[in-house]
Amino acid sequence: MHILKRVLIAAAATASAIAGFMVPSTAANAADTALGTDVGNIAYDQFSSDSDDVKKRLTEHGANCNFYTGFWADPANDRYDNNPTGTCGYSSKGYEYRNGTKSWVTVNYRARAWCADFAKFAFYWGGAKYTGLNAMASSFKSYGQANGTWHAKGSYVPKKGDAVVYDWEGDGVIDHVGIVTSFYDTNTDGTFNSVEGNRSNIVNHVMNTSNKASSVVGYASPAPK
Image 1 (cartoon, rainbow, N blue to C red):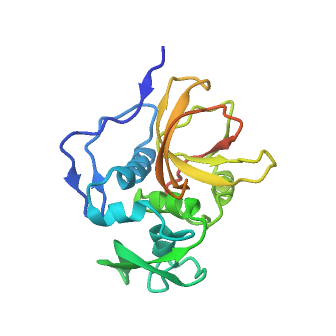
Image 2 (cartoon, one colour; image 1 turned 90 degrees about the vertical axis):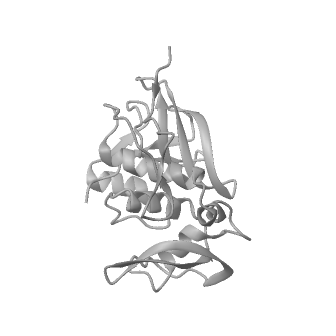
């Protein structure tokens, strides 16, 4: 019988002081790590938040125009990654750090494929190391290999907060990345749920993916700073 392996989300969640999402009270799960739980909660709370500002982030506006790339690519942001093609005429509110101060500011959306920007956002706000991650989904595999947290599919049960990477075409090229939010069963034949940016152009809650699906390459667990 499948056993649900997921951190329980308390009904009475309180507003977080970071990044504009809800941080739930949780019950510990021995299979999950504290860091992974934090990363997974960030991803799930982006999807489920009641904040109007956060809800605005969940859908791109025009081709790949999105909040999460704007978060990383804003040149006024200390976490500046790179500047793709400039702003794309849409914005919403979000927290940024500047010179050690956290401010609720307007984030200008920018356009590029953004699944990795979303997953990197979850790693950042979840307190994980994010050095080495960039706009490429493949950077999560490289990150896992560099930090000793890479797990190829087939011999590993995913945990909350893991970055799951996909090869949609089966051609050896990593195409997409998401964040595992819960998993079923204690063996490698189970399934998992995930929250993924830029999955059908939205922040999507993807249900019951097989741990051995042909599209799944493996998992990068978040590393501590």
